[in-house]
Structure formats: C-alpha cells, structure tokens
View: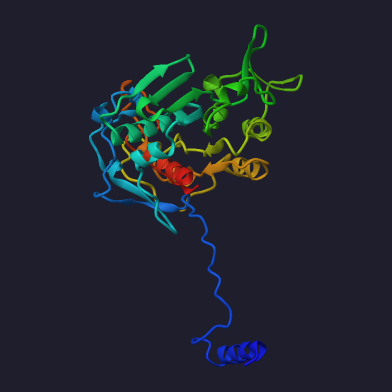
Length: 349
C-alpha cells in the first residue's frame, strides 16, 4: 500500500474516531518552571523546623534567636509556604553541599541579607552536625562560614546599597548612585546573591546619607524610590559588564516586607490573609532585571513576607522590650523558606 494512501487513511480515521488514533506523534507540553512566589501559608505541625537555633546553631546572631530571647508562642515555627501551582522542595543540606562541593557562595547586601545567610548556614550545619566548620570575620564587612570537608564556603559581605556610600569632610555621607568601586570583592564566586532595599526607604534620623550624587551633581532631596531605581540600574550594569554566566550564577534576593505600619508586629501570632497590595519597589526590581543582558534570577519573597507580620522578632531581640523589630525575621522562621526557594533555584540547573 503506498505510503501516501496509508497516511491519508490514518488522517481520515482520526477525524472520524479521534479518541482511537493519531497519525502524528503527540508533542508533550514543555513543563513550565514553578512560580514559588504565589501561594499561602498553611499550618503544618508535621512540617517542623529543620533546626533548633539555640542548640543547633551556636553561631546565630542574638537578634534573630527569638526563642532564646523569650518568645513563648511557637506556632510561627509550624507554618509552611505552599505555592499555588506546585510544591516547594524540602531543603536537603547534604545534597546542597554535594552539588556545591569546592564552590564559593557570596551574599552581598544588608542585614536582611545577613538574615538569609545565617539561615542557610544553620540549614547546612544541621545536615552535617559532625563535620567541622569554621566561622571567621575576615574584615569588618566580610564573614566567612566554611566546611573544610567539602571545601565549600558561604560568605556574607555587608553592603547596604551596592553602590558607593562615601564620606566627604564638608558634605558628610554621600550616596553615589552611579558608581560601584567595591565590585572587585564580588568577583571569582560560583554563586552571587545580591540584596538591597531596606536602607533606601529610611528617612529622618535613620537616614544614613546627607546627599545623593549622580555624576558631579550633588542632590539634597530626591524621591527615595527614584534613587533606588538609579542605584539598582548601576548594579545591573556592573553585572552585565563583569559576570560570566558560564562561571557564576547570579540571583537577587527580593524585597522582604517590613511591618512598620500602624498594626505593627507586636503580639502578632498568625499570618495575615491575602491578597496583598503592591509593595513599593518590587516593580522597579522586576523591570530592571528583565532588561539585563546577563541572566539574573529573582527570588520573589515579597508576598510571602507581607503575609507574615508574626514572623518578626518584635520585642524578642535581646535588646529589651522597648525595642520592637518589625523588619528582620526570627530564626528558625521565614528566611528558611527563602533558602528553600534558593535551593530549588540552584538545583533546578
């Protein structure tokens, strides 16, 4: 029977009885990557935290160890982030270290970056509690956590703005929105995880600069989100010019929501319910990253943090009840989910 007749017969048969035969192979739909940013928090008492900060992480910062600082309610430890269309993989510290054996990972950012870095060191340490580790303060801004057995290092470099903040004898502290002079410290790493936002929103006495500068122009007053946009664009240009994607993976730790509004975070014990309004700065981050030449993956943590006003240290920072922290996060707690998102992102490829 000629091939053309055979094919025509199959097509006719398929049109009459489409459930029985197809003359052409069915192409499988390409699986879309999971969007971990959309979902909700569910109470799950079987999803216990992966570590006890007081026993398993002797190196954790005092301000993040809410249980040690007297927090008595513990439900905040039993909420699990459930993405709308998939599951977030459980963090496996042993698998993470095997994948990144002999590698160097650098977090660059502010104290929210430190929050995530400390969470990651705890998550990995508890997976290999009998392995040696070292924790060293190499400079006033660089802290190194390393696992000699795996020849792996996870570092945090304190840098609140990414762009230059310089001191001028006459003008005071000047935030130079279009220059990065410290970028050499970011080179030579296998993974870079950048973060900046927290300090850009400060005003009044908590503002850490006296002037903005763009080119030779000093600017006393500028919309802070506009300044953030210019500064983040400068960072994006640095990445595009300096990063080799075949050697270095780049991620941006998204904007973690603060709860310094009228409701605050004091005595909050349950997550909020969605949906949530747009959060300032998020569109700026997404727009700039989308236009970059080099691939940068956004860890979009904004919604999941908007919903967790109960996850902040509040008065449990070890600094007395007069100090209420609604910006940082208890450990164990919400930042562990950020690192589960990081784990999923890094192990996808």
